[in-house]
Amino acid sequence: EPEVTQTPSHQVTQMGQEVILRCVPISNHLYFYWYRQILGQKVEFLVSFYNNEISEKSEIFDDQFSVERPDGSNFTLKIRSTKLEDSAMYFCASSERMETQYFGPGTRLLVL
Amino acid sequence: GNSVTQMEGPVTLSEEAFLTINCTYTATGYPSLFWYVQYPGEGLQLLLKATKADDKGSNKGFEATYRKETTSFHLEKGSVQVSDSAVYFCALTRNTGGFKTIFGAGTRLFVKA
Image (cartoon, rainbow over the protein chains, first blue to last red):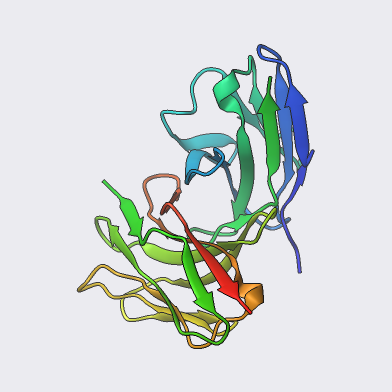
């Protein structure tokens, strides 16, 4: 069964450093998403992406964040200058059409 | 706005007990409703879904019925197993221009042998 994959599984970085989180969505999917889950809290929407542009973003997704689909298979989330409060589990998701989103295993980001 | 409220946990049950995790939602229009499960140390797995009123989603013995009149989507299972121990998230998806999914806070289930 096809699945969403994410790399790395864990990332430790220093405050102020840039990180890039990578995702390979399911191959025939057209909609891509990033979510995050701060430890012990609910899963929060960050951004959705369709047809090579952002279709919606939350208030969390400020100028420090960007997304890109650099080729036909990868979907990346970049955090330009990480802050302590960016420490969280980041989930990528994809969907073929509208509703049903399939999630990757997550990247656990720790900012020191 | 759109939101999901689910019962607080943790819920602790003995094996073979009946499980109900309550979920209610607030949304304009007709959202699609989902239950996701997160096993310890893992990501989010889609458990079941319902896309319109009165639909019943089911998978692995779990069921939930989309009740528009009560804006609810309660998760049930007749006989839980130790392996069902996980965090369960109720969620909805609306077309707000990007089909984002809005999650409830999650309910942790512990099943004792």
